[in-house]
Amino acid sequence: MSSLPLEAVLSMKKDLNYYLNLPYRVEVIPDEEEGGYAFRIPELPGCITTANTLEEGFRLLDDAKKVWISTCLEDGVSVPEPSRLEEYSGQFKLRIPKSLHKQLAQRSNEEGISMNQLCLYLLSRGLQF
Image (cartoon, rainbow, N blue to C red; front, side, top):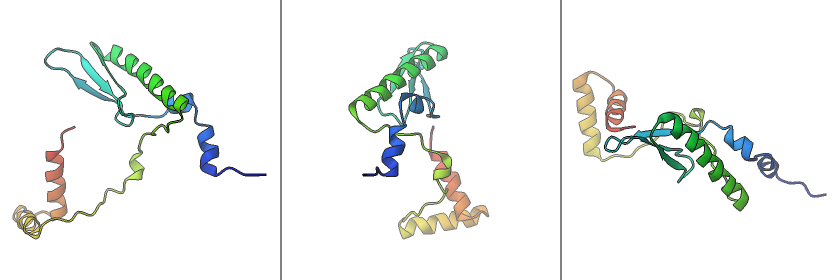
């Protein structure tokens, strides 16, 4: 009697309803020039739609998500699951030039804050969501 790996057994239970009930992140991008909105699910590349209203957009995106996931399941393509915040520690290593390290250290000293706080401030200012 052959036994399947645990991953194979778990993936067998992952049907369309399983994926439709996962908490995928939705991005809503207003179209300031022509009005309306674009909607997308970042974890599902190409799963995107447009609509004139938010209500219509969420409904259309649900339909697009269902088709996107159904197609993957029919074609035997793995469906990405949403990432969870607890998967991230909040820490990562970054190698930078010595001159930049010196500038950051000097600036943080001038501001009276840690270099970690300064880098967090600078990174968050530079990111636009």
